[in-house]
Length: 154
Image (tube, rainbow, N blue to C red):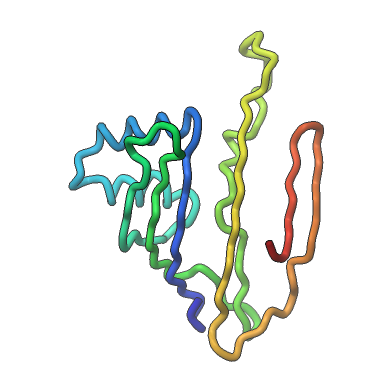
């Protein structure tokens, strides 16, 4: 991260199950010349608004036994925001709430909820001379079968 709040980000994103199938299908359907724009718009646009894709590598595209993985180098002009003489980092990679919300009424008799697993490991290299003012700490939240765990380090 730079003193301005801009950041150079190395991001690996793996897709398994139906998401891996959907990604592989999209990779086949999108022309090579449009792939970077498509990834920037459809994947980075929701996770890191304002991010620019610098480099993209696709791993395991044809190996169905492994997760399809996108390795990306990204530039982001406002990864952190200046506030009160410091930089504040807002949580990146927030899930879209519309995909987590319940319908107002039952639309199907399916009783099995769709499983999802999101794991984010974020390592931030601070600008020279910077320090963390408010550490993250450890927390765990549970709601039935759902859980969120936050750890300061792995």
